[in-house]
Image (cartoon, rainbow, N blue to C red):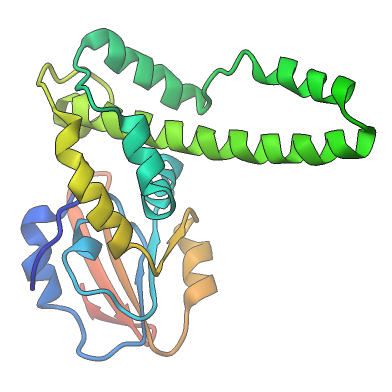
Length: 230
């Protein structure tokens, strides 16, 4: 099986354990659900299933993968063609992610001008389009900021600058590959209990891999509501 790399390293990632994990998969199941998807290493290393769900409670992760899936060209364009490596840039991305928004000082002015130059009905329609475009741009910018924050941080922990250069152009081909791989994958940003309740079926295969408070990885595989590996 050809293994596809993830775009990112992630704390508690399963890059080195993928083959061991696959050996414990059941032979037959109808739907594949990753409860704690993380960096997606397990998902990207296997063949696509007809019905599969990637979930993580970290909204930055799910937003990044959703943008890569749905807007790969916009992601690459925002990523830029010149590498950016420096503590100032790292701190800027860190601030963007903490605020969960990109400042746009002109948008409010543009909204007001629409009301002046168009009828009330036209203005409402135009403003809705502008809001939608603004949200989409915000999603892309936040996705790229999060990607760069991970890449430039020490140990991919997003907290301290890693002092190691990274050429973002190396990610371009991988972005397209990941986008194609996720084409039919449902991406969720849910609490694990809500996710399991929503997708539980007799043929549902839940893969639960997470890090405990003791910093030890635990893995449980569920099929037909029974633990098949613990």
